[in-house]
Image (tube, rainbow, N blue to C red; front, side, top):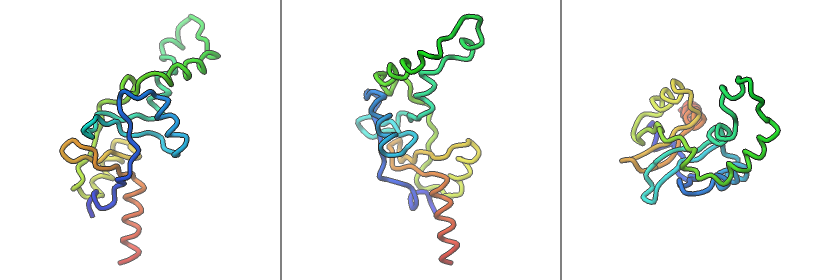
Amino acid sequence: MIVQNIMTTDLKTVTADQPVKDIALMMIMDHISGAPVVDAENNLIGIISEKDILQHMFPKLEDIMSDTHFDFENMEANYKDTMNVKIGEIMTVDVDSIDLDIPCLKAASIMWLKQYRRIPVTQNGKLAGIISIGDVHRAIFKSCMTS
């Protein structure tokens, strides 16, 4: 069984020039925790996640550990400010992806070793889909039940 047979192809994607509020709304409305970031030609250029958004608004460890007072009460204002930032400014740009013709268990192994819940699937740099650990598990379970 290969990735192409079980990947999700109906994806929610965003572009780097969209404001963070677009993906935040998508996360809430569609119950997702992130999305691939693509350019006009559907090339995968990054990924944006809840973690990226929260990292932008939270203070750095050295700020918290310093002797100066950090105003945690203002963090909600930081979140509001983050909503207007462009996705390209806070997305993860060093994105791992897998090819659509690799075996599903190889994809699962990569996700397991890198501690990913899901990974983009590309063909020649273009986004083709996404696969999750759950997709692999369901496919293997289903094949075992029908054999």
